[in-house]
View 1 (cartoon, one colour):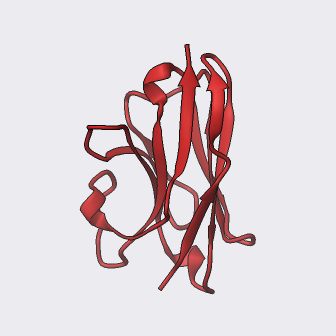
View 2 (cartoon, rainbow, N blue to C red):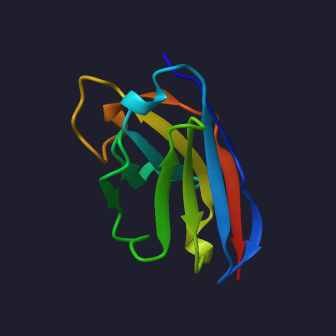
View 3 (spheres, helix red, strand yellow):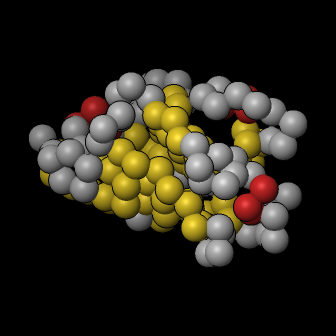
Length: 125
């Protein structure tokens, strides 16, 4: 099992940057692929980014490609989401998630069995 705690959210102007962190408990963090999702009010949770367990492969939603970067430090049990050139439409609660070990999908929320509590990101225009 793994427990996840996000941090780093806040209020930023359009065009600004934020870096989200997700700290994981447990000794097996390096065996989990990780993802970031977001959910805006009145909308479904949507995929943002994914990183493989080793960190060698990454995937992004088209809406954030070229602006966001996911990374991980397995020695620190932490996954990051660097968000640049933020837009008002990026406003949402951001969640990190650990993919269930038997799943192979990247972007579906159902692929992920462990979730953090979320951190609010608000981008003002």
